[in-house]
Length: 170
Image: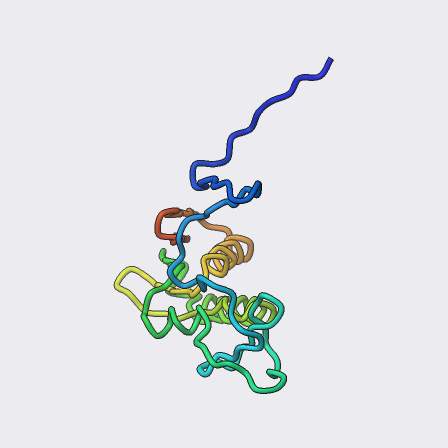
């Protein structure tokens, strides 16, 4: 005899019934388009092309509509989605290697996902601060640092602001 359980949607979802269809309204992201963009759409800043529902690298076929992609919009507004704070004594002797690792992760991710970019790598009194256009890239950088150098890794996700703070130190 089987048991059935009724699962509730996570609290971040609000269910709305329209024409017998359930639509889940996720947390608001100001940098995500509210409506589907015309295809093709090209970003005038980076050249990424919106095609078949996503941003990609490649040429725009025909006359393309121009609109800034979410990553360039974040860069223009200086409003990161991810922060990676790097600290500890290890950083002082391995700074160039760590920055090289960050750039390699960025290149790998950016080649497949144009919206995942490093905005800045800044020196601070207690280490480095890396800002990213996407929280997935911040997570990937934190994971790569831990994998390559071990150390202590922490994630702090603010769901309301869709913001990830990563802290790594050794």
